[in-house]
Length: 78
Image 1 (cartoon, rainbow, N blue to C red):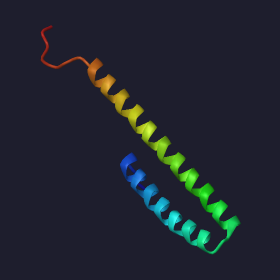
Image 2 (cartoon, rainbow, N blue to C red; image 1 turned 90 degrees about the horizontal axis):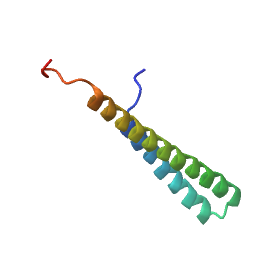
Image 3 (cartoon, rainbow, N blue to C red; image 1 turned 60 degrees about the vertical axis):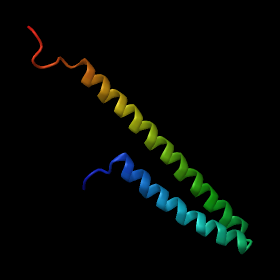
Image 4 (cartoon, rainbow, N blue to C red; image 1 turned 90 degrees about the vertical axis):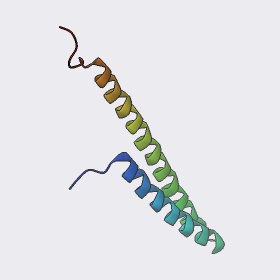
C-alpha cells in the first residue's frame, strides 16, 4: 500500500471533519449531549492530526531544501 502525501492526508481528514460536523449539528438539534460531546472530541482529535501533518510536511520541506543547498553543485570548477 502506498503512503499518502501530506496533502492527500489533509484532504481526507477535512472530509472526515465535515462529516463529523454534520453529525454534531444533528446531535445538537436532537439535544443529545453525550453524543455531541463525543463528536466534539472527535473533531478536536482530527483537527490536531491536521496540525501535526502540516507541521511535519513543513519540517520535511525545510530539511530537503537544506540538503539541496548543501549538496555540491555539478559542473563547478575543481
